[in-house]
Length: 255
Image 1: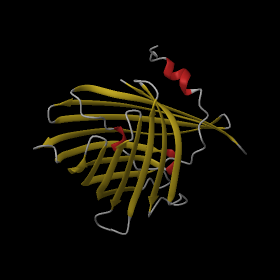
Image 2 (image 1 turned 30 degrees about the horizontal axis):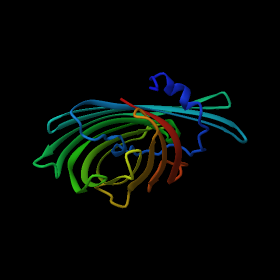
Image 3 (image 1 turned 90 degrees about the vertical axis):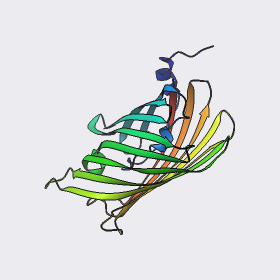
């Protein structure tokens, strides 16, 4: 029996999501890539969380992914929005919009990447972050069920914090990442990505983020996701922790 698209809303409410910490600042794009097939592909994710301890916290997030591939060209568009409600009010929001273009060179061992991103996160006092960057992505190893990729990118970062003096920073940063994908079989997939983003002018200031994910496909269209995130910022805004981590369950609809 086929499951129609509106069923994603019903299925999402069947799961009680594990508690999670506050959101990290780095955005993992690698997990959103799909196998390069000609034409348009995409997926929609829906996550819900309800926590009751000293306070009641309700959190929801949704993300949409579109990918268009034609020959050596690939364009990726991402949009993510998250909302948090504490004790019935105190709405907190975060999200990002990301556009990435890839061009495969030769047999695809090297891919030229460029990207632009806008991000905001009131939890981490981030009013606005704008990124523009690019560089090469290398295919280190690829087989039927495993892939290893590394990319030493460079980016320009403009950041505006939501504090009293509206402090703004403009920096050139490195954006080095390694990505590993492994398919146990056609229904079980593991992914791991680690990012390292140093300030090009002050190398002791950097961010590190890591994400490990498990995807279990229970129909052609629907998957269950378990994701672990960790992010470290060597110089966060005042009163914001250096280390953040997240454990999340969710539903994914592919089209």
